[in-house]
Length: 126
Image 1 (spheres, one colour):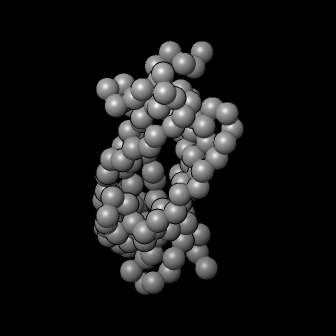
Image 2 (tube, rainbow, N blue to C red):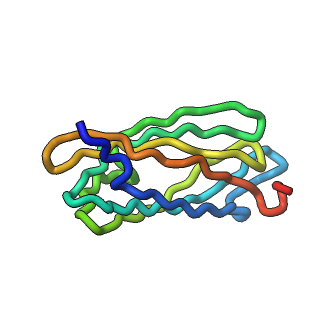
């Protein structure tokens, strides 16, 4: 079995949504924009997602689900797919990491890792 995880690059941008947050009630809303780039030689379909969300107190929550934002996109070779989503946290800082389960046009499934990234209210991290 070939290691296909390095054929997919995942880039993340995050932002704090102050207008939807209520810090006095420990409600911090963050948005994230994900770009998935297929550097492989064949198309790959995103089947499912797995997130590990860790708040500033070290509490973790795992989220698993089919596709992303209601889609299971097929990403052609040398192409990319982008989407936006969000998460609610009870602390001003936290992190997310995880993976996407992908399937090649040959039917081979593989995990595309998502490196840890920070979620933080501006000025909360030194």
